[in-house]
Length: 100
Image (cartoon, rainbow, N blue to C red; front, side, top):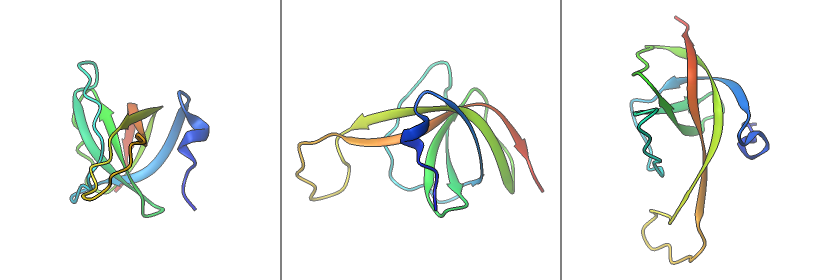
């Protein structure tokens, strides 16, 4: 079972995963303060977008600590005609630790 990110909105969390080499399609929230955008594959099989001040170059598992944010926008899914906003929860990373 995955993390319920909506329960941690604007709170600090720590999660374990690995930097993805196959990013899925996600909403992106550009930030001058956290300009590095990467994709984190979670142990649950989910993937989230993470933002950091510097590139994260861990080759294997990583533990990140940061604040959960909510990003909203229109769905990028072809054929989706919903007028509702699409919501993704993402993490602004303050620090990380690589595991080998």
